[in-house]
Amino acid sequence: MHRANATDRTLFPRPARCAARLAAAGAALLCLLSLAACAAIPTPDTRREILPDPMRMLVQPFSPEEVIAFIGAPFPPSATGVETAGEAALDSMVVARFEAPRPDVLTYLAGLGITEPLTPGSSPFFSAGPPYDEAAAWWTPPIAGDKTGNFSGLYQQVGSKQYEVVVVEAEGDQVTVYLQVFNT
Image 1 (cartoon, rainbow, N blue to C red):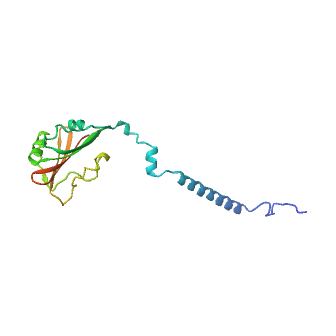
Image 2: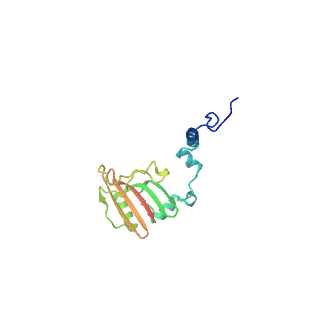
Image 3: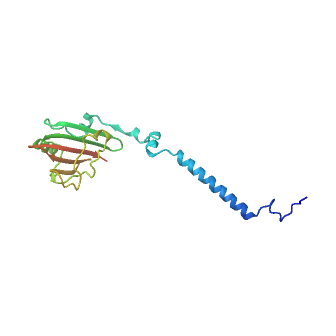
């Protein structure tokens, strides 16, 4: 009959082997847990649906009438193809696009208190992307640094509002106006 003693390796494995086996088992368990965690994390698009924007409750969309009131004056009577979008939250911002004869646009801008001249080839917009999803179909202004097209633009603060304007030349004296107004 075999009697166990302190030097018997079958009953008492070496401590180094035991620690190595324990570390390997721990590493394997950690790998399995991390794989399970990766599979459970939703993609960013899915996460947006799960976690709504907490600031969204503070945002109030503007009606076309509210956009006009925020801008400060109705569009020229000759304006056609008028498109608007905007919202109020901690700050307010609106965008509009319309076509009108150039003289009517200049009178309109002066009526808003804009005194800066339109600078040829200048745009205050750094992105042609729409600031609002509902403006995606019509908000396509020339952007700063754009060297193609016949347009002019300006940026001016009037009171507590900032006005950014681009006027794109079209046929005859007709122009397309891109207007963004915001406060902070």
